[in-house]
Image (cartoon, rainbow, N blue to C red; front, top):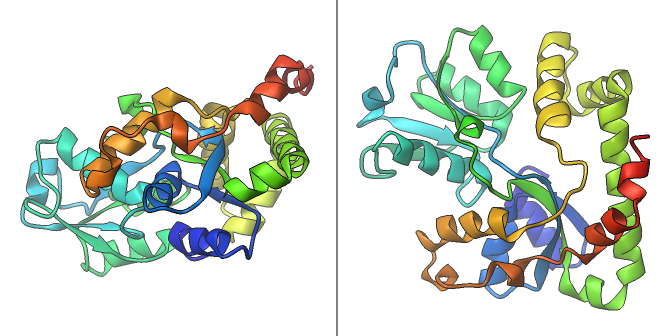
Length: 267
């Protein structure tokens, strides 16, 4: 899928049953009336960096310039706004936010001068550093709970086919355990789907995502969902005063936790 928004449209249309997607995209769709629910959170913070062209040494120098993101409404968009606020800058007023499309297109857009900075994830962060670009902010270092990446399905699937959801979540936690315990295999798979054989970048991405931030138990929580609503409220007043519990179903992961199944995968 070129973007999470297109993936969400496919889920809503019934073309797919499950979707790996940002919590923000799910919550935005649900606030808009879509029958979609987060059933797992695999990464509970924003693992992104604000990277700039070499001549931009401080965030203040971005005033009057532009930041590249994938698309509006994505976690990359959220990361841009959080990063700007961290430096006392106002999105769209002090710094323009420009949609570039795919993540792999942001670095070339910076190289070509279309934007002066960008919000990147791994392995694009490593690629940008190799080119001499500056890391103005490691957003993950802010230690902000945020339902960044997870698993979403339609409410109808949960209601009508709970056993299917249970099996899917079980497969997810088994895959997470395999990723964490089998580095060579995971690097091979990552290289295939990220379309790179750069072992240094793949190793860095593995250490950051699989080892450090990927959650053994992908449990959705109120603490990680509330900031998603807070960010959405800035763009959509309908998100104001919404109960975070409305947007996730945690019973499938909890079942695997309490049964000891998840712990057994690491023995």
